[in-house]
Image 1 (cartoon, rainbow, N blue to C red):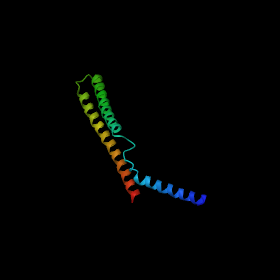
Image 2 (spheres, rainbow, N blue to C red):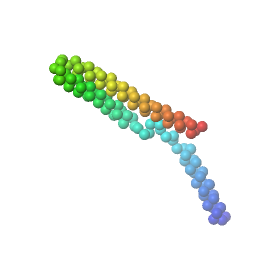
Image 3 (cartoon, rainbow, N blue to C red):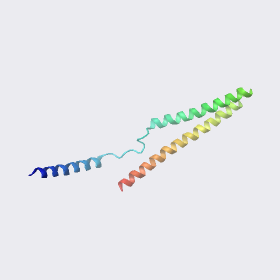
Image 4 (cartoon, one colour):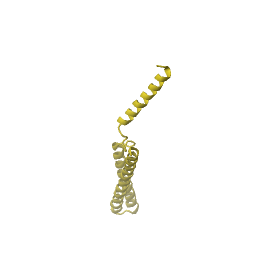
Length: 110
């Protein structure tokens, strides 16, 4: 055997090994860029922020006008609604990313 034959056989063997490694490699997860914990904390922060801002605006208006806590209750509820809306938008965004990644992964397999 010559040196060239050995190099060619070695290159073929390395190509086969690489192909086998790629075949056994688990597919990339669609949500690998964001973990469940990060998503949960993001949603909690969005909810608390909405409530806090609504509470602050309501309290400020009640103090300014000297009214009963009608603005406090009203704006706290509006803050709750805004927080839930932002949470749902974040969840929808993550779901769309996962769906797109899954579709791209399925296209690669076909």
